[in-house]
Image 1: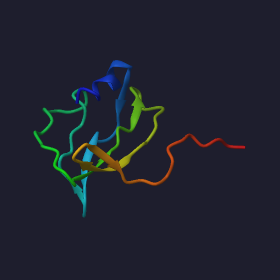
Image 2: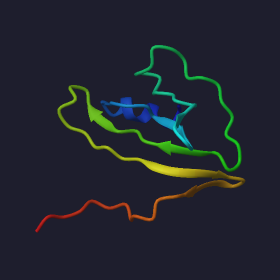
Image 3: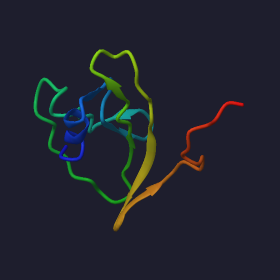
Image 4: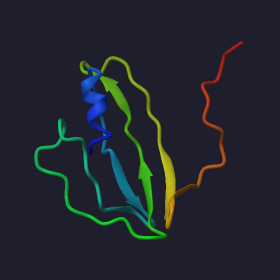
Length: 94
């Protein structure tokens, strides 16, 4: 939640959940940011081998521009393992 505060601090918002669990469906936890949630984020504990999708989907306050990003990760003892094999880059059109 602390890291997500930087989104609003820069004048943006999100158009979806910040993160959600993954594995056979759309699973908890499903928090939004402090600025976009009607209630406090649910308490949860990250556990080793838990998978989750991090997807801030940042947009302008008027929702006229934005970017959808997401990353499936597996929680490890020392951090996370990225599950996507596609390089993260902005493609350039010829």
